[in-house]
Length: 327
Image 1 (spheres, rainbow, N blue to C red):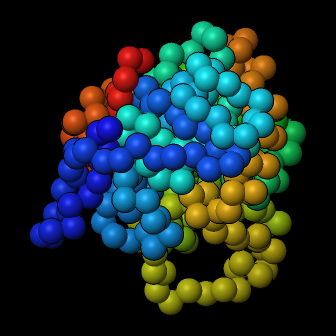
Image 2: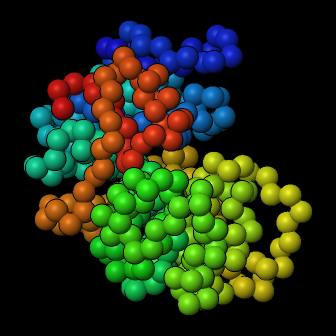
């Protein structure tokens, strides 16, 4: 089969489409004929050699396709359309997936739409509800609102908790898209001080929850934007990982819960439990159209390099998909 690996020769670490062996599922796993995979920031970090937890030489952590083989009792059979997280290997014609993480694709969804669900919606669900403990009618500040996780988080927060959703993004086009998904307050971080806008929107109180993709650059402004006893979830460091001369007292005085998290290195049991709870809670809203995956662009598998550049240049609204088979 064909798969995308990283050529470690040289400084650029280019992606390479090459012939590789078809993986074999062990007990409790499914062999998936991949029709679509999705591009994630974790793929780029892995490509750069910064993700020590990735061992599969083939990139990709989420796929949508059909079951080619089921090893053991799983509730799935050959031909079933499924989507879910894999332990690497998604950028290929076949991949193995733990059966406990497989989700049946709603009938109305294409494979491209299905591939746009697992990583971002599970990440958003985990950060909003398991870690952020977002409750009914609370407020949440979602940075990078037009990103894959951002577009998922807007929909989950609005649909499942009727939250007041405040988003930041860097263009009018992206902010307008966030508004259409349900965002209540739109902040252009290139033109506005987001902490001031958050305080205006919350009558000076601040938000209950922050989903932070940026890290160091937003440290002070996030501290100003969160209310006492708020929950701040760090899920990215696009703005740097080192905060110089940190004063910890504001965290203490405001009694803030600051939690850092990643989904990809979590163990199989954690991902299985998260998948089961998310699918049960979200499936009805996918079926009735209240929530939807957001597909920005589709690239053929042999154009994975271009797909990565599309993400690195921050041009996407929603998910970037790799077409592997008919989608």
